[in-house]
Image (cartoon, rainbow, N blue to C red):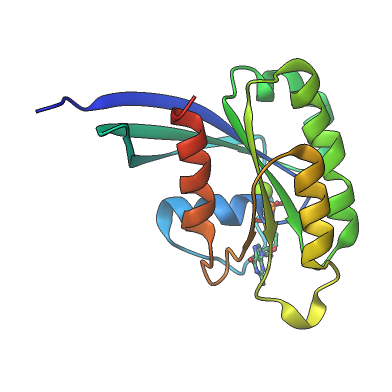
Length: 175
Ligand code: GDP
Ligand code: MG
C-alpha cells in the first residue's frame, strides 16, 4: 500500500476591499456565510486539508489560507504577506468592474518576483445577477492575459467555491 504524503502550502487571498475574500475562505473552511459586515483586521490564517490523488498516490494537502484587510493595508504589509506563498487566489466582485481591472496590481508582483506561484481567479458574487457589471468574456480576457484558470463563485450560495480551491490545490501539488 502506498503511504500518504503530507504537503503544506501557503495561499494568499488577494483583491480589493469587500470583493469577498474573507467570505470565500469562510465558505470553504467552515461552510458558512455571514451577511454581517466584518472587515478583517490584520492577517488571519485559516487551514483546510484536502485529499488529492496524484499519479496513483494520495496526498494530504494542507492549505494555509492567508487573508488580510483592504488594499491600503496590502501596500504596507505586501512583502511579509506574500513571502513563501505557493499560490494565490485573485478575487474580484462581479458587481464592480474596477475590481477586475485592479487585479493587475496584485498579479504583477507574482509574475515579476515569484514566477512559480500558482494563481487562480475568482469572480465572486455570482448570485447577484441583477447587479452584475462584468461579463464572462471580460473575465476570460483577464484570465487569458494572466494565463490562469477562473471560476464564477458565490460565497453566499457556495457555488463553485469548493471547485475553485480544489483546482488550485491540484495546481499546487502537480508541479
Ligand atoms: P473582503 O473585504 O474581500 O474580505 O470581503 P468580505 O468577505 O468581507 O465581503 C464583503 C461583503 O460582501 C460582505 O457584506 C459579504 O457578506 C458580501 N459578500 C461576499 N461574498 C459574497 C457573495 O458571493 N454574494 C453576495 N451576495 N455577497 C457577498
Ligand atoms: Mg476580508
